[in-house]
Length: 329
Picture 1 (cartoon, rainbow, N blue to C red):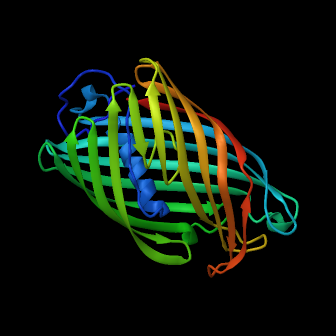
Picture 2: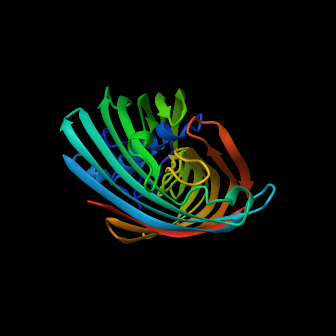
């Protein structure tokens, strides 16, 4: 595990600490939050020795099994989900004071609905998400920096129309590094939504190292698999092991295909994964994360092609189990 330091500031300490990342995202709107988590997790959590390289690369991928849960409402029904995600990111030092970050994320959520109620007619099955984010970071001095970028995303059920699945937007922010253990960023994101209004969302990021072996993360957290925001407290057991306890927030909104109870409509899922994470650094540049917990506060929504709500129900807590691997090169 390595101590976090925004990579556009010089490395002033070569000691190894627990990795820290915190990106508080106010408003919980999906796209700006996801862009922030991509760029912050991929490019700010780095070994200090790598901060002056001209080009760096990160890859990650994982699987999550979410057990079957009952759906509330008349008719009952149930939901079970298998989730897969993979992502790559690059960082290019364009000049001494300008850095270019790029991320590409791909996710698959395979849903299994059963019974009546909300599940009637299988509202959706396999959902694909593709997301590309780009960002420029410019340091003003050793404490201040500005950043700005954009994001495009295609989120759709298998066989849904690609052209009707597009959303995108941009963000602009200012970073302030108070000390080795405290970093703050504020900004604004503007993003479109499927069958909804363009939204402007304030964003705030914070990272904090309260002690040598402790890390507090609020916002986007490591290996989040597409979560919009979250919070985590982590403890470094050794150079190879770290434990974390966290609560994430995830919102997926996607275009449906031309069959089922809402042809060309929109599906939505929101939930709060409460998890325990055990990270094993089995190679200087490779880490395996084991994840277990519960998916809480699950909400499902089915809308027609005009964005009118047809069905909306909660589902019960569900066991949550998986693993993810991250490599930095």
